Image (cartoon, rainbow, N blue to C red; front, side):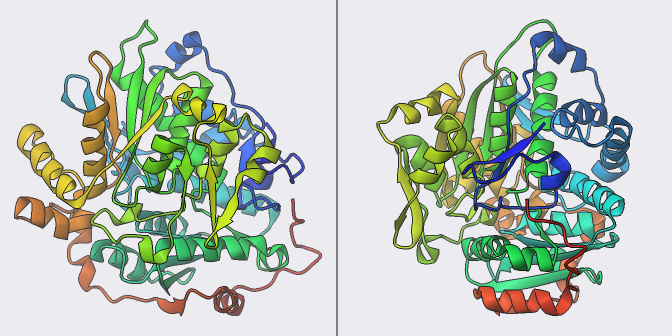
Length: 481
């Protein structure tokens, strides 16, 4: 399998060549040259596989430059009951006939990001050890990516993590989960701004190819292809859980979405042949993605127009993974992808409304909807009253939107994003009591916190990294792809 850029300016690369990086050198995103096709007979052979073995047979299609024995060992070390609480790894809870919850939040940081990030930790350490290299991971988080990355990378040899987050815009639990870590290889940076400012800073550093090579900069944000492909696995697992053997029954999925990586994994699963009817994109008040799927207009907002909500991990107005979908939407035409973007008020913008390309949105099964604070409170109450299940605020957004797109006889699976313990203030507002939390996280908000505070200034960020990350000698530096 070879990898290209959505903008056409990168020579074909292998999986291990693109694993540690973020943006392609031309500013695009890394995409596979093709999606492997899975027929129904193969699907049925995979139905009974344990999660780690299912991950292996899927991942080997995309990372065939890692020996099978090594890859199998990596995924088996990743997907264990000790790490994820049960052998199921991602259990499915049936709420009522044809309405299901895919439980993705049983990992170390209680969020779906753990499912991919734990694998990334093993993959990174494996490749770095093979090549005798070090890596300085630079990332941005609106809440859950940061903690999942830090818990996956803490203490790993040859790896440092520099994680940016918007100051004061995560929940107290999310903040404490990151900032209370004492590991010497973890650096938390609170940025004066919103998540999109943090994401822009990461992209700016990644675009400076000399600095990136000199300081061995890599990424774990959802622009990292390995994270996306790791998430493809649980769509297959969920499909097996809610269908019976013998028939290609279609299933719909609703995905709470901010950066578009989680639902993009569903799109890839569908393109590979998994019988998915609908992929429902659920947003909160920051409804840039919902606007696109309704109108064809992609119009990112500025800092002042990005709302701080009670589902903060989706307080995103520039979906960093979206370009991969756009590339597919325009027929994998790199020139067309690059030419689409126009600058409006300093932000990328395009309009596909009324074009034949936009008609492919329906062909790909995409629909969408937006939620609000009042609606997520009501959904949390209704879900607890009807099913005895307390869900977090983002999952509530997903369940609220899912109800609009349910169809008789078609199973609807809503992807859980986090445990409610991470958003206690809103759960308390909805239910009048605190959510349960694992014993290991008792009193986490009171723990001492360690972080740096920076303005949204790329030059200052580079200086901060350079002072803490040794340079790579030119002779040993990895060449730019």
